[in-house]
Amino acid sequence: MTNLIALDWGTSSLRAARLADDGLVLEERSLPRGILTVAPGGFPQVFEEICGDWMHAADALALICGMAGSRQGWVEAAYCACPAGFADVATRLTWVEPGRIAMVPGLTCDNEGVPDVIRGEETQIFGALELLGLDEATLVLPGTHSKWARVTAGRIARFSTFMTGEFYALLRQHSILARTMPDVDGDLDEAAFERGVGHALHSSTLLHSAFSARTLALFGRLPADALPSYLSGLVIGEELGAQHLAGGEDVVVIGSEALTRRYELALRLLGITAQRAGSEATWRGLRAIASTLRSGR
Image 1: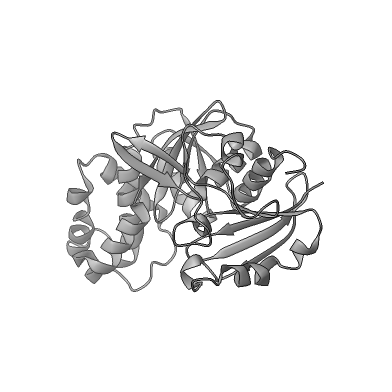
Image 2 (image 1 turned 30 degrees about the vertical axis):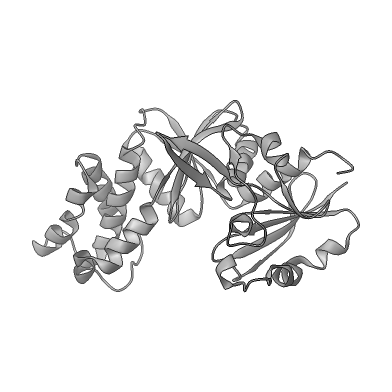
């Protein structure tokens, strides 16, 4: 039975887990060694640092998802075209060390003549499907670049990227809005957040609605410490408005507690129920991909 070593190697962080055959995490480790911190040629050393002892097992198999498979990473893993499922991704692994260490490919799809890509999120999606027992779903993975995906018959049919987190940071730190906001975000103000979501959903564009964060403060209609939550609601509301979601629909939200909470609140305003999956989705997804590999690979 394969001793699976799962790695989620992103831009800013590195997580690794040793998994049982049922996907249970036996041991987990992390390092602040995202790909941007690794010098050219330094990936094998960092890999050895985080899980070298786990690889001593004769049947060890390391599967790596995320930006380590990008052009700036360890070894570039070519994108797999949508629609794609577990088996499609497993057949497109890029082997760093044949039979021992492999990169999971990202996915690509075409949206109105423009290519889009994900790298790492595909594994989280596959894991969430297994955890929740779904083969049809609409999913969102919030973050700096949020991803919305549609799964049909267990395969990722299409997805799209929204630069929501990055736009929040730009407006929060580098626009006129920053002058009226506190230095740190503080705890989420749910009322201010929901007000921002609602305004975005009834506004024609974020280019117009964003200025309300300044004028509400200017006229004393929103306290300064609530402005970050309000602005967060504006950008997330803009993102949700682009999805054309129907009331009564279910959406799977994959991510950290803080971010999934915001999306649950925003979706609730649209009459949409959210199901949640956390970091465990990555490990379950890598286990699912490994399970499709033939014995004696």
